[in-house]
Image (cartoon, rainbow, N blue to C red; front, side, top):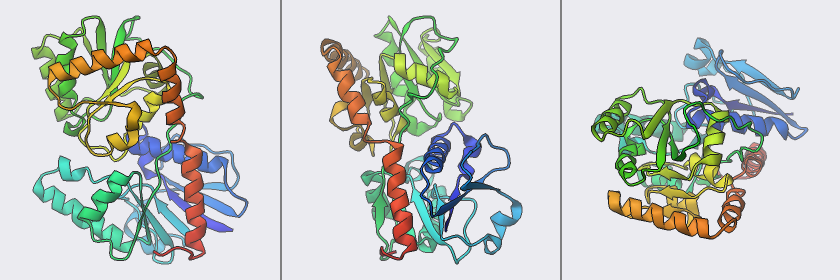
Length: 356
């Protein structure tokens, strides 16, 4: 039996991007394990995961496992699903490190950038294999880190189609048309450029979901008040998957002007629902959105407004054609493909068939 450990510690923040990536990866892996695999999910003590597969075990995080890695059990493969894991394997386990992005180069001050670069370099030096989630992230890593002879393997994220999630209409909507966006409230999400657009769409609301109890969230609230748009822009805070899926399925469009993304899960989630997506041209978004997405050439409010109006008219005129193309495009980013590529990687690494 091949013993594999998957570090799912980030599910402690279940509704963050890393939390959702981790739980969906785990669910798909548990459903399709080969006969010769025994998987152990490494999880925080308080979690919402449960698996019926008897070939999946769980191990709880602890002080000793965090600060004394040599005490951790040896596995054929130890896979950390994020670049800054709190827990490390012992040196007898083959370690796969998945790097999602280098967004800290944009988000952090010079001192913190140096700190994060040093820590990431240490992890890269220690890891046996590096994977990442987009070609954009691959180039960023190659340009900023010393990989030695190690090669980066790109495996796109899987994205849930949402078809198995019950859609529940949130109580804060009453049938109005609305634009939707979602994310952690920090500066890179660039939500502020969306606010003045609502002066030009007086028959629409704007819903910005995500934890807004941050410094940037407070800035957004002040700007909404200054623009007298409190009755037009809704900040519901964190939302559950049922509400999120309803909002994705019923919005007029996803507006996603982010300045830094390693992948951009909401883009494909909206496309699975056949919805038009309006994106910035920054970082990975053109790679993920492809030719079906619409892109802001600038964040000038007139340009953004004109683009949204013009492209929505084209979408409406196409009838069901655009919706069908969008859904078909999104299918390539499925969890089956993602997990199958990792299972293949586990086998190759364990059998020493790839250069590390």
